[in-house]
Amino acid sequence: MNYKIALIPGDGIGPDIVREGCRALDAVGKKFGHSFSYTEYLAGGCAIDATGEPLPEATLKGCCASDAVLLGAVGGPKWDTLPGAKRPEKALLGLRGGMKVYANLRPALLFRQLSNACPLKSEIVGDGLDILIVRELTGGIYFGDRGRNAAGDSAWDTEAYSAEEIERVLKIGFDSAMKRNKKLCVVDKANILETSRLWREVAERMKASWPQVELSYMYVDNAAMQLVRNPRQFDVIVTSNMFGDILSDEASQITGSIGMLASASLGDSGPGLYEPIHGSAPDIAGKDLANPLATILTCAMLLRYSFGLEKEAAAIEAAVEKVLDDGWRTGDIAGSAADRTALGSKLVGTKKMGDLVVAALES
Image (cartoon, rainbow, N blue to C red; front, side):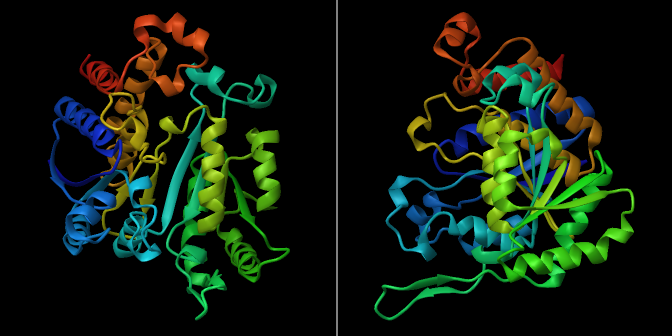
């Protein structure tokens, strides 16, 4: 079967890592008898340079007509002085809203091979970490009313949620917990925010439908502390747009490297949007230094969630594990200067790491 994938390489290292993700997809397709056709679109800073808009209409239309969307990264200092509506990041909000993908699944997984890269003590992380953060993606303060007064010396951003928006992302949280260790923590600020109190009310109404799931609540400031104090207490975290944005980046760092973490943005129907959670890193763009593994693991999520190809997804994940088992590392996961010296020839760049994953898939 042929699957249509819209590609948005974007800015910075985006083209470098998307290229390696596609190579992994082609390798797994060849192994299992699938084919993938790719159509490339502009979004982010490169789209601003070419069209004056961060998200051209043709890009959103093409993405919505595809079977899945693979995105690299957008943004960079070149465009930092642009007004908010014209910044590259506006493309992400436009894609999420236009594609109606409202739940962002961000696994925070500490690979056992990279335990030395974790900044936490070994007695805290134990035999590893495996947390899934489910972030609401199309509501909250990022999509609320905002503005400034006429003088420009006062500004506001509004946090707003409907019960329907909360319910649909909580359902994904509960369903995800059922497939894992049956623990769901709703992170909010219910002691202060009215929207957070609504989150708790909706969760309480829904919990009877998932009697096997242990439901708990935690204030976001405490959750940020607990992620570094005792992260193994968490299984699935579900939270609002802004809180999820912050906590998932924190979780990425306690797993050793932001360059290893994938994400999937899903809705009720239509194509999913898949992107690694790291940034565009323009300082290393085109220098064969970026770690492509987050994008390759994102491709595994694409196969699993959009196409239902579980064996194929597992094959990519196993290939990444084998490459790590064999000691290959990019600079971001190589550890200290002494570790890098010890690695010697096993310290590799973007393309070589992609070559190794492809070779593992073909073996």
